[in-house]
Length: 312
Image 1 (cartoon, helix red, strand yellow):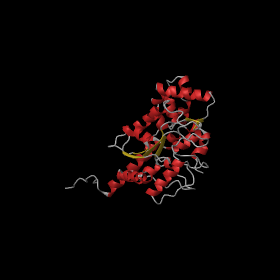
Image 2 (cartoon, one colour):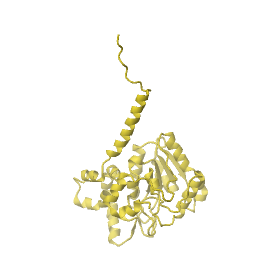
Image 3 (tube, rainbow, N blue to C red):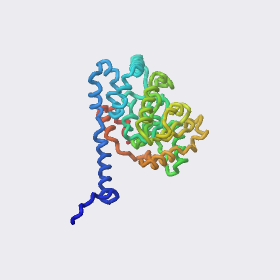
Image 4 (cartoon, rainbow, N blue to C red):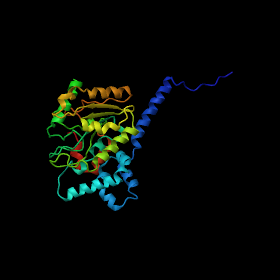
């Protein structure tokens, strides 16, 4: 009597191979299916007034498509509309604002929600000429690394001795690796620290953090200083790893920042949760990580960003 041929056992080599292929296909298609910024804008602005479209032009044109889809309702709330009106008034009064408009949402283009592994919170953008470009603690090439960033490099070197301290302060490669470099406030008036605090940015970045807190699991939040720690109180510590330390500023770094070892702790947590570790050593000169497709499309939409997103 002929016996029915059983289906392959889950532990068979064929089954394992098929599962590997399937998981790779899912990973690849997850990128393919992500909506383009154009698709998101078209869908979201169908019922939007021309006045609102004009007010939200920077968000609609320069924010990453994934983040724009997540935050579309947020940017239409009354508080955000008032924030944009405030920024327009600053502009009409010839106030110089940092970072440049095209770079306010750099953090979103380098690190879409689907790629976030680690979140580092800053406070204000740098307020001196040529420094701020939309990533906290980071400055463009040919701009000397600020004191806080120098201390970050020192702490990282203490933690991971193989870390090669770069001569520049451009952290885009970390962002491309999944490190969201987010300031609490996304703009500042030139040479006036905290001049745009309390205008609405804090509520907006709270929404960014809340989305990651509720919709993602297994993220690492690095909170440096009382301001960041207070902002991170809402983070669910059963779903994510929260690392706290004093701020890397020269005023406080000596009180424990250099020995906090957050970078190795983050990598251990990611590894323990089955995620790829961050290559913190990717800032060395002449090394450039592949630019994600979403960043490439952003460059095509806004040619003023080319200098910002190129590591050369």
